[in-house]
Length: 383
Image (cartoon, rainbow, N blue to C red; front, side, top):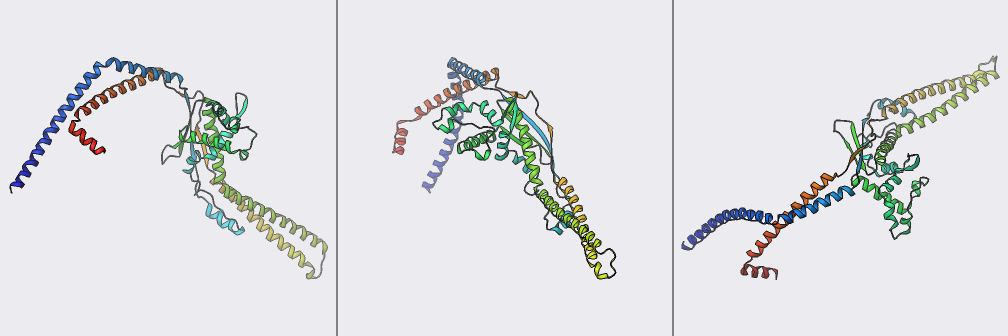
């Protein structure tokens, strides 16, 4: 029993010691903060000098940093779904034509992913355009804006040093080095990000495109070309199946029309051969030709009606991408102002100086707290 009581007493003493040590540590922390404040005040000129250096760095950065231009474009998407497909399918199925759109794969929400796809960004960059009376493309304008050729000239690879993207060169004939550079530019545009595309809300059909660069013409022309290339691709893909079926049915209708014309000519020829036939057997050919004319005519009329229905369906399936607000000059200009650069640089420099002196103070306390016994224990643990 005596040993158990001793253990309880020791634990209670430890708890009391812990409580008192917590109180003392709080008091010591307040004392340390006061000491740090005095030390920093004694070193205030060093802090001021470091803050001035930081302000100078901020000022230098504001002068050397080029301004950026942001081009913004908003658009509305009207995408019809379904509508009249069942009637068209029942009519066109008579001629072996499968009718259906691509709405499942290219729904309205997928349009926002198309804007940042590599294919359409590359098409936007390679699209010929006229700037200041000179025909070029946005890829060369991007290269000139960010002075990429200066870096290429220092490359050890000859194909990189002589890198060029002529307007007359077909995209399929690009070399491995050209593909690599184009891929790098695409990654920079989409990952930096320079290009952002977003829908204003899940229940809204309005989207926004913005592009940020150091060239005002590049920013404006990029969003304009991107909306054009993406809209053309989107509309073409959405209506591809229906248009293919329409062309197939149109070809069949032309064939039936040729058959109809042939049947009419054959009937007229046989009727001329037996103008006043007395025997009924002589008019069998005329009756047969007349039947062919009626069948071919009825078939052709039905196919023409189906073609008109398919035209209406294609119009229903064609999405409408309407630009609401297009970018206009002058674009929104953003740059790090001199006053802002000085303020940010000075605050950052002063804060880092204070943090450094506080760290030195606590490090000195840590070294003093290492008694000879604790130093030996620390060395033993390291061994």
